[in-house]
Length: 573
Ligand SMILES: [Zn+2]
Ligand SMILES: [Zn+2]
Image (cartoon, rainbow, N blue to C red):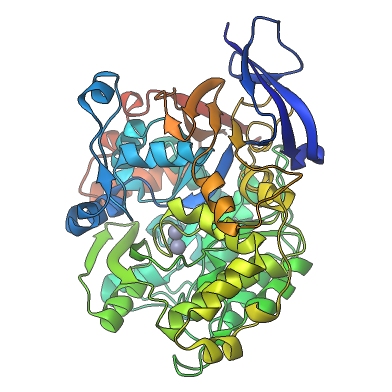
């Protein structure tokens, strides 16, 4: 079948410690192989950089809150997107619309143009999982998975109040199967449930009303349940008290809950907790007046604790849309900027809010947030444990990843931004970015965007590298490893439009343009374990008593996820 050889590029593959060696990548039947026949199609990568396909560990790209954003922000589409020609549409390519919340088609095409092959939808409300899968199905080219949210789920809070980790684990296994979900996501544990009554849990020891369980107990219990099951990914956490000055102490305190929990899985994952969009959780000061960066303090802790992986959540200075399962935070944000606000509370499970936000470089707070996101990466010691994200679209759209890479790779480009600030001196005083000379290498960028996130997700032998046997996701960029451009903008440009991107063995992008819709997959986790009679009784009872849908109509039907890639996990009794 189809054979391709990517010839003569500077190969960068952290999974095999290859840093810029000139070599060929051979592809056959969707996989990377040792060699191919002489009839293989040749892609000339001479003078260019060759990496594995990008892996995005955290983005909001599909489902109800993303679609609320698309619906209630028609203005987001007015100045962006384009209608493809009639000819292109005849060939099966679709219209692309939206800037901060792109349509499903634009989402797939834009990731592919940047050489990304796998994207994790970061927050799936379980009862709305059919919606998530319908949008994933519509998104071309990229492989996707979705994380159902557990941190405010009534079953979970009931079990963990009683310290029942095994029952929690059985419930997680059942829910992953029902939703075709990938792992355990936690958003503002306890706080979003409290928001059902207009309240919040700000500290780790604030009990949830009526449930009398604390965020600390929820985090600890879910960490243990995750390892009891041996899931490919760790518990994936958005912490309490997001976005408030002084929150860094609570951040470190909740990261510490991971101490003493051991990773147990057969997928090569070494962490027990992934802490997402850490930028929003690294704030010092007591109010917006004395607001300052605590990135150094937070990273000092992360550097020491191997049980953690993190992602940055970099601010990109755009007009964007915030959307999160942190209901009380979104209400608080609307109180600050008075822009439109949407809230949805989801029965028994979670809630969400959506508010537009403008990260304006003339505002000191936004500038400090921008600096914090970059400081986190520049203070990191192990680049396989920290990943580039923008919590798309919360801190900015994912299409800005190339810009973030430029900032991390070039002090000159960072200084140009700092020089443009209206409150330059105040920003310099409240952050340390100006004093940091470090510039990340292409190898480190590949760790942060490829090998690291793939390993953290437990997908390290499929994605994120170029070893024989792995999925043939190969990106080629117009960058000369031996002669990097002196103009940092050329780095951004090169990462924005891949010279070539091969997804699962098929050329899908050439010279920055989409040339094929590819054949995407949806990845989920299926836990095989003996049925737990108590948990099944609890679920049946609750669907009779509390849910507005019937139990048999709850699970995602197979036809909604027609391109499955199922990862099986076996748990013994
Ligand atoms: Zn979040
Ligand atoms: Zn998020």
